[in-house]
Length: 267
Image 1: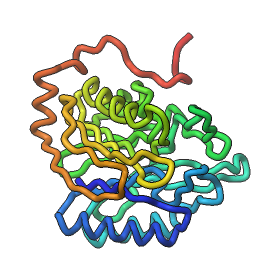
Image 2: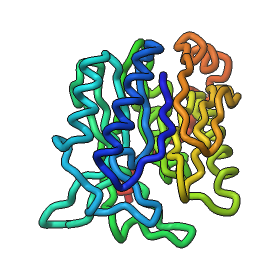
Image 3: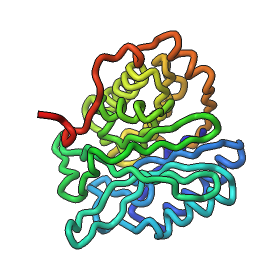
Image 4: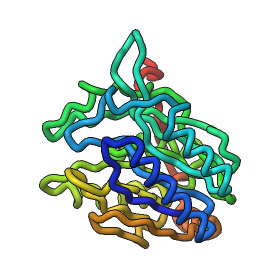
């Protein structure tokens, strides 16, 4: 798996160039999957909204699919798509593309970042809490998707694991600030331990965000951790090791509660 901790900007064309380079590096090391951060198609540390949006058949996702088909590398990337007449706010979406270039699924961020003085919901609309989880099967490993602020909600991660995920992938543009880098690392590690799942948390680099992408094993051991500069790194994920941790620590099998979206709760 190749982790692309890139520094995206508001220049959509420049971000496509960055995307092409990330695919070239992933292909060079024969990676099966490439993961880019939230807002990889366009980013402004002051806030992302409708002015940064492009449709799923726009330049960024089209290039993502073309490069996946050309290289055989599956990919997950955060993009912003336009709203509609009913709600003009854009949507924060992670797209999943397989190694043939097919768009196999999308996940619209459920928990918008209305915290620490920010109001993401002023510019973006949330995804439905009851939407099916986004999972992508590649090379014997099932990857499940969260986005950035979702990491603070353990039920989101558990729901993806219930859909069969072995690895939690978290594209993010984690806002910088007091204690924020510590929260990012701690939460990623906690989600790994409590779900006996690997966590691949890919942060945006650049102004206003922490970067600091990390890969955490299902036992909670941090195997890779970057700093705040742009960087592209590749790691191996062993499905046998993932299964072994769950056999030794069967906490998922020992659960006594299920995660149900709020709209599905019985009175």
